[in-house]
Image 1 (cartoon, protein in one colour):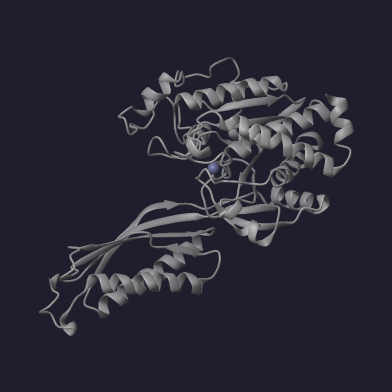
Image 2 (cartoon, protein in one colour; image 1 turned 45 degrees about the vertical axis):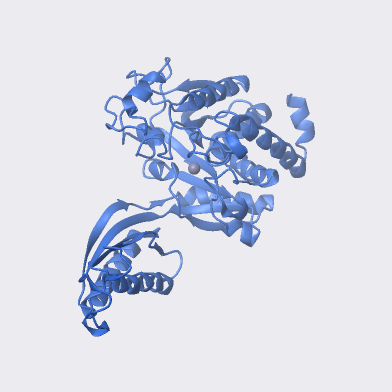
Length: 430
Ligand SMILES: [Zn+2]
């Protein structure tokens, strides 16, 4: 096996070729667990498809000479033991949305498996341990909470005190966890996961889930940070009245007011400039009848930006503007954020290293922010964290249509290999 690798990986093209084939094969293999119609994959937390996938991954880790073990939440680790202290971790989540694709989450795990297999075979034991992690849950598709996997690792959640949540069939999180054999209050064997505060680095590879890399023809997205998100629900109040007998000048039309506000929100985000994004995804008029002037209207607002200061500035200026629009039409507006997720910045040291690797490998890359949430955002405050994107065809994700070309998958894995080599075999970066 080693000889074969030495021969075949003698050039970068051969390495890409080999990894492209292996990544495509491994993703196809993993997609059989929870496979549905039309190539869709459904692997919800603690279901049998999920259990089969984690058990099969554990066997896969063992087969390439890693030491697999589960923590109490069902996060799966595969350890390549190093000679000295310290651990570098890479991976992503094994769960999917309902009828999702075969790349979201899975790619980060597969990339980790292939990178560790390659490093082990080519260079032997590292100075510092390297682990691949298959996080139990990220999507929030079965229970209404996200990041159950990485959240348990960083101490946001505890398996002994699971939130009282039910799935669509009335099964609680605790029941599902126990039925899958987890939540026993201890790791399933003698091995204990390293505390993330002792992780020297966490690196997550993921599909972009947007179309920037594809449009620009670039191979690697180097994530600077994951945006913060604020979500609001606003209620605009006016006066419901007769559509025939109320002259235009006498109206307090809440729907017209809300419409003006929605366009003002769009214009404000455009004027603020990238990477600010603001979205009104839902609008409801009341009473919602064709011959009645709307007495009230409610709409949602989702605002995202990688800097807290920018979110503060944008949201408070916007609130003033919405009140002005309401005031001039005799309307009132109320609303406040019901979700406030902090942005997470990636490690400058690690992203610099990734940039240099792309440069020396001849991969086209760009710095970018992630507009979607990822496990990396939970680890970023705890340990130096990096995230790399590969292109998503058409920007499509959470769909059986998810697709990334095998050679694009491979380029990401090559960067991961180089980064892990630098961190675990060279020990130049803490
Ligand atoms: Zn994901």
